Length: 448
Image 1 (cartoon, rainbow, N blue to C red):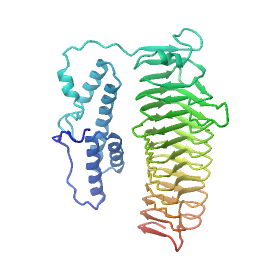
Image 2 (image 1 turned 120 degrees about the horizontal axis):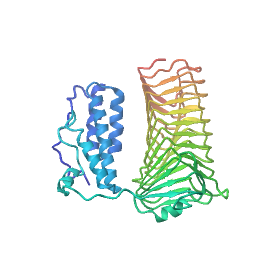
Image 3 (image 1 turned 45 degrees about the horizontal axis):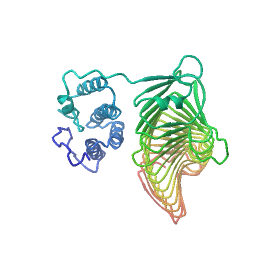
Image 4 (image 1 turned 90 degrees about the horizontal axis):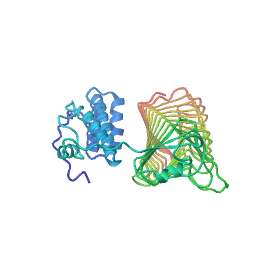
């Protein structure tokens, strides 16, 4: 809806592109694409592009990209404040702080696609005070308004803050209105379910912070995740999640865009995080460890972003991407997974940057027309080959270190394809390469 009526008079600094084939030229194209995404409020895509430019540290683009990231973060916060009906005094404070970012090296005028400035200009000079969000207390014993979280949710108005005292709450939470739930104190509040999802997201926005969420099924055939997110933005912060049935966290459907920060998703009977049917989301600084299936499973158009996560000690693959799944995985440790660190197949095509894939069975295993891009990753110390490609798999690896694996650096067979360029393939026990006659891997500027 924003593309057709977009104001095009924003003064953005976009340096000239001296050479479209150079790295600097590539950065120029990346910067233009990122700006275009930002102008259309496609903030997730814009942030992904700007983060790449910051890491590349190009003298013309890195600082500009960092500034854009700051602008996007503040403007997204303004949008969230409006959509979740924050008090006027809160929005006004955020708007004043945001205006202080301008003018700058990116633009002279305030970046404001949603027209907040016009709305502020038409508002009364002294708007009436808005009440703070209602605060509700829950405790098993002692002074509190409610003895169960479900009762508090049923009574809470939209925007309420619910503080939950310590103890074990055996119940299932269905979130049907914008609320925030805070464990008080953190790490001492356990919500345990046995017959359904422990948390089921059914609203546009909600936040949970500091809880332990456990699904301990009453029957062996329970087909539920501990946290089920089929819509909206659920923010999970500092939570511990485990499931004795399906995934610890399940994310699905177009437009679903949760945020998981500093969570531990561990020891699940199935997978850790499952993203499918065009679900997205940001998973940041989380530990996903000891799960029976894949630590992270992505399929059917799922496209999450994972940053600075530790995906470890899974009984199968650390990350499994298949059936046209995608996603961006950056600066993650993928370690100690029994089968493969990363497995890609049946049209899966993730992007991994600056990841460390170590001490797994195979490092990266691509088959059945899987693809994907790995840039500047360490694929080291794995029990089999660093990279194995077969049956139409066709990944691209650039500037990776594929070293000290117990078999080959890259092993392609049974119709495997791909491109490996600018990589270090020294010190693999079985040699740098083994490319069978029925396979074809393009090799450029590698160390062997």
